[in-house]
Image (cartoon, rainbow, N blue to C red; front, side):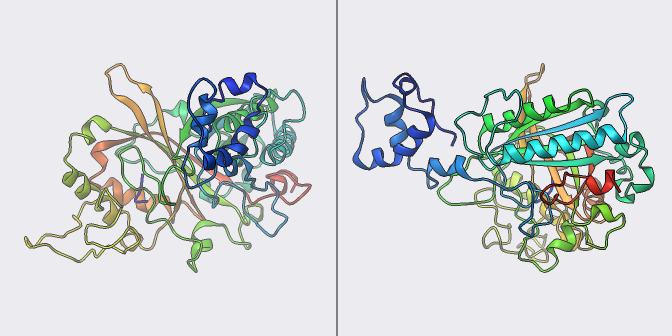
Length: 425
């Protein structure tokens, strides 16, 4: 980790023939005149009194294009706004499956993702999980792991950027939940839409590939805050303040592979580093508010640096207090992960939180499904993580339990599938 509404159950309405979409569409108008709770009120009345800034009807209607024929060169799910629900899943090709089977699979998956992201059902055997819902900002993003190139006899086309990540002292990695031949990131603002995509893609894999590991995450729902703001993680910290911004002149250079890429099939793509980071929340929550803020180097209330200002104010790393010590401690997470402290190294962080229940010892199995994007992980993730590994004040409160590195090619044009230039080149 670096410095970085769903509708209510319609209940009785379903029995009176009021569809989910119609219920949501009439909620705002009903709220304007007021509804009386009682025998005839029920869930419809409750929905009508919602005051979220984002109208509920807009949450499901937003669609993100899969094919980027409009000039976009990058797959969806990288620079798009973070969704409320997500799944990360890795597949391994089945024994005996090679380049031909992989190409057929990516062709099927790409066609399916295009339909699902447009809000249409899967062509064959749709499960009906997402019936009545709109696209809900669904994005499906595909990547290739290092071992994919061995299994498809494409080793000569494998980018050097997929060389294994170095070991870090804080790693406690489960190899069964790490890496994989193929990687899929799914995000949506509706949990059923996200699960529908996961299930459809798994079924479409057929005999060509098997799930290696799968993880489910979440973020704050659209409209849950009075105004748009950076998300918080499960430690309660504003997380993602230091992300590079698309408005910055070197944004594309940091995040995306240039058109002159070697290998050429990665032009317009990016490299995704995944880490399952367990947060030791019981230990973290024993700290006072002041101690937590010193660990991070930012105020918990609004994400502003300890040196003052707002969330977007650059921290004054040279500022000292009355005691002569740095206001932002030398080992504060915000200081150590700052690009200026790492030779300009930066990455675009787009994580999901996770909670997988309570462990046998009573501690929550919860934390961050960390995903970061960069043009080259050796110039993005690796130098920053090495610096954090040597003395980040946050390290005692987190544990890296799974890892993955994936090459994510550029978006396909209409009629193409993801990875076509690699698999048919």
